Image 1 (cartoon, rainbow, N blue to C red):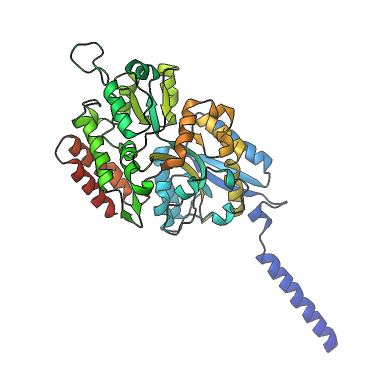
Image 2 (tube, rainbow, N blue to C red):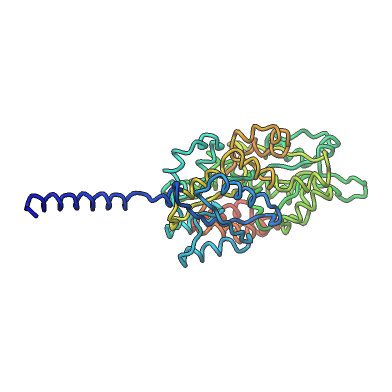
Length: 427
């Protein structure tokens, strides 16, 4: 072979190797759900009602309409879910996608286990349909990246009995001052035996009572903020005044049951359902039981406003992609499908949760549901507590201990606020 021919062969071989190398660097069909290969995804979910087939039927629909992306679902009990996820991440066996809670984000982003979603969301057609303020609410990390895909929420509002309001001559309160007046009128000795039979409000002094408490206090803070730049900002004179009113509902005005310091969820709900109390703060997941109990004689309204606006607590369930997934593009296709209009509508009807999409909220089914309507009215001022690694202890231990001591007169309402601020600043 001549030297010229050898050079031509060598050049052709070099070109062939370069083409092969470039082809190897390109995304494979399997990574994107290509025509000839099937991407397999693992998704973990908890179900409030494990017997409800709706979610699994939805996944079957996805698999049928996306033949190149097949999702395998594992249903894990709620009580074990977070621990299972942490263990799977540590052991290298995390799923591709999973249901998630905002409060879990810091510990999972701390070890870079979650995939940031901004680059995917920027090109997602459904982005503008999501309730506007939720995008800010869901950015809970210092890097301000979005790690969760919006799915379903609940906003706390006030349940009330229209017949009791009419009997007492009470209108729906728009401010906390009006709420106090209403609670006083609704606290009555109905059988005239010298003892109070009905109290105005079902106060939750035990664990997780921080959520309805926050509606009193943070509505008195500029911007309705709890922390700013990592420091507590709720410990202001106006917020302390609001907290004093909260404590005085029990100590001074006596418009809540005497058991309030120890009352948890079951107690405050039972007090309302038995007619012992006339108002209760909770979310839409209690509405079915309320309707079974009272029929049309139960309704809801947004929590009243303080001097700086309104604040209510947001319950959340989102979906995430784990950074260890080898098929992130396909994973986002699945999660974005779950957050599309038809799927959000189907899942919210089945689960009783509140849709995050404005287009779904406008549907007659939701607009004609008074509890959904109260939820929608509350979403614009719904927030979550700061998502920090120490917030769990503050919620579980610090807040219940401080509020119970204040209700029992062992510390003042101002001392309670100072201690809550001090402990939150430590986190």
